[in-house]
Length: 333
Image (cartoon, rainbow, N blue to C red; front, top):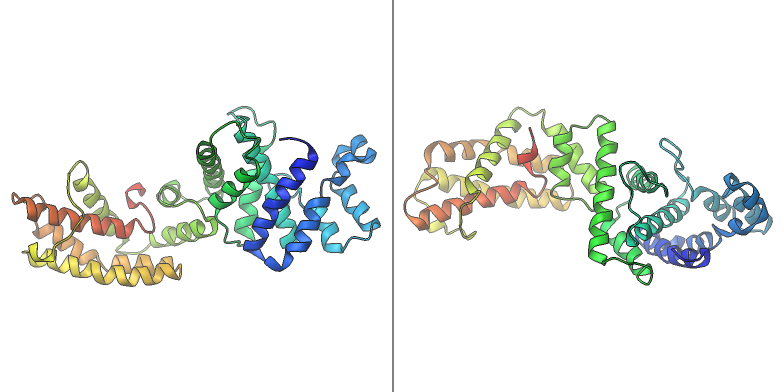
């Protein structure tokens, strides 16, 4: 994507963008490490022995009197170099590593150099996995979409394709890498799919949702809640309705109780979600088992009166939207 100088200036800006979200106090160190991390590529030593890139750069930086954290980041920005490889040891190395890798990924997608099933000449899968590991293992709260958008801004003069198309494809590329990583760790596919189908941006948050949902599946009342959600979603399919609920239209005790339960649960769940306490949110959902079961046992949703029918459908939609704040339970087997 242009000359080495252009690339360095580009991903330096991206590294500074990431730095502001990780630790703004590291700005000068990150900038210096970014500007120097590719300098050894123009040396005869690396030209003769390409595997020494980064290693030689670290030593040249030391001899030039650069600070130890900058020298180490010059070497570590190539990490992880392969599956299972160690990660950078500092936030500076993490930041420069993610910026360099993301610049390569977005740049390649921007000009149509997308990996195929059999070919990945630029190692984009490995680099995406490296970014994912750094974010998750170092517990960085970063928006993947924001990082992609910022990288696109830096690459705007080089891209042959539309920003929206590239952003979607790069996001999907990361999503598949992330799903494969979790599958290798033994996570159930349906739990992963239930979460990523509703939310895939801040990876650390996505991971917390998946961990909470995987644990919740072992709870006694959880399966019945999933069944109730699926039943509600199936009824809503293909049915035209307005999402406005009018409590005065409720005539059955079961629907009145479900409505009140939904209001109470929404308040509590929203409180838990603000704190990203997904286990407590899911636990609160299980408290709705009884009113949901009673509603389906005693209420005819598809009533002949259009107003009553629409009101009941809107109530089911409200229940569904509440659950979708964490995951799409219909994906659970």
